[in-house]
Image (cartoon, helix red, strand yellow):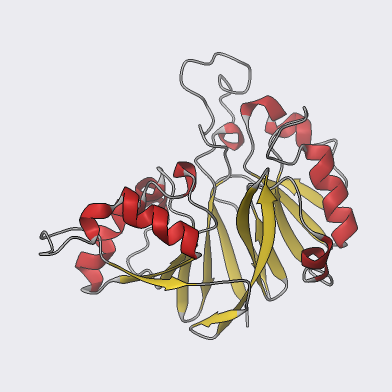
Length: 256
């Protein structure tokens, strides 16, 4: 099965440029230095699947001109990965049905609290409609696409990454248990968060992400969830190993 991945956003929680920042990255005119909040679109012949609905979700959906959405996966409940969920209303209206949303129990709890109005009865007209499907660490299937959850940690917060065939997506992590790394062995392409050069309490630095990719043994690696502190895209990219790349908004890759 051929899988098409579109990077909808590759930035950290504030995006790039950051409000009120005049650093060289935030002032850059290079489109590669403009980053919305991190998310990807996973597509097969029968499936349009979005991973995370951050505050830029509406803009991201308009940018790819998507008019059908099969399902949503949520990695964790931080607002930069969740707060755009209200904008599924457009898909509800055009498709005339709720959207299937896959997440852990702890994320469902946050959704029901944050978007309480979507679950109240009697239902107010026009609220976002979703069918929440709880997932655990066990593999599951959406429209023929096999998905394997990968447990990672964002400091102390448990987060899920996902493996789709020979592709894996991991954001918001600074540690991956050895037993989860085993699930990633033999991967062709992996996406890892790489926030900045300096040590951070809950994200991989660029060097830590490089080392993790090498430990996993991925043939090709893309870095995402990038902050302005990492530096200019062009400058950072030229110093990376030849099989590693900074992802950028709008990048499309194809894998199996």
